[in-house]
Structures are given as structure tokens and as C-alpha cells.
Length: 259
Image 1 (cartoon, rainbow, N blue to C red):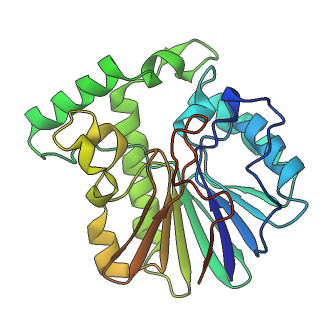
Image 2: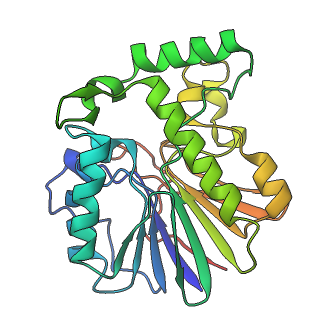
């Protein structure tokens, strides 16, 4: 199976009808989109349905930016309503779908804030850095109805725990498996230029134990705006983000990975 892999298109920085990239849609069986297409989960689903789904099925995992200007709970609800109208766009939030005999497991993942240390003090510092220095907690709500509730680092940890539990349930099952997350699943997905940054734990968690134990064939992620392609035991990890505008010169708009 040939997979067209994309993430972090951030089309809000272009025209809403911006092309994915130069050149034609590549020859592939499934397009895997690891988040951050447009603000609004439903908006992203509609865009993918208009521009990619006519050529192939789409696996879509929401990124953090899909929830900007929206809430987690209502945003997902509206996104699922949109996806119900577009059967070739598979919106996965702690969910699985099988296409052509390949099982796709999708989760935004968020983070446990434990990338750089597991002590309560280290996790608390990473969580405070997330709330203080990133826009997520200012741009995203947890819920808007019946009363507004803010999105917090604690909520991100709760969502991460749910995603871990989902993956632990699904990964032991037999069959060819591709995992798709927005947030990074391994320390190797932190670029060396960010070594020692207090923000790293906001972008990545260490799920290497799952790769070692269950060895999914491929793990696709986004969120970091650097390109990665490496192997952990028998799991290939791929990140192909566009980033903001021309931020990532290594972005390949026609990247196809065969499994």
C-alpha cells in the first residue's frame, strides 16, 4: 500500500483554497494527514474532502491548531458531523479504521509532559511552561457549552492518557498497523537545535516502549515543523510537515511511503 504523508499544512496562513503543494496529486492508495490543516476540525474535514478525497481515501488526525478558536469537545463533535458527510475522510480521535487490510490507529496524542523527566517537579515545570509560553491554552477551550471551560495542561495530560490507553488496547491486535498521531511519539523527533529547551515536552512524549513491544510497521506524526524519518526497532517513524509558509525547506508535498 502506498501512503501519501502530509502534516502541518497550516493553510490559515494562505488562501483557504490553497493547494497542498506544487505538482499533481501523487500516485497513492491512501493519504495520511497528521493534523494542523486548518483551524476548525470541520473546516479541515471539508477541505480534505474537496481537495484530496476525490483522488483517494484520507486518514485525518486533528492537530492542536484544529481546535484554535474552538473547543475540544464541540470541535470534535462538529468534526465528526462533517466527516459523516464525507465517507472518504476518516477522522480518527482515539479510533481505528481498516482500509485495504491495513489498520490505521489515530490519536492527537497531546503530551504527558514527561519527556525530560518523570519526577512530579519536572512534569509540573513542563506543564507550567506549556501553559505560559504556548498559545494552546489561550486559543483553545475545553468546552463552550453549557458553560465555558478553559483548556489546561491537566486536560492535555488527560487526553494523552486516553490516547495511550487506546493504543495499548489496539496495538497488540494482529495485522499490518499504521499509527497516526499529531504530537510526536519519540525523543528522536526533537531537532538537535532544540536540545535542552523547556518546551520539548510540550511537543513530544516517549512512546518508544510501544514501538519496542508491538512494532507497528509505520508511525506518522506532525506538530514539530522538522522532517524526520527514522526507525525504532522495526517501526519506521515519519514526519513530513509543511510548517508555516516555507518554514520547512525539507517538506516534500509528494512524499509517498510504501508499506
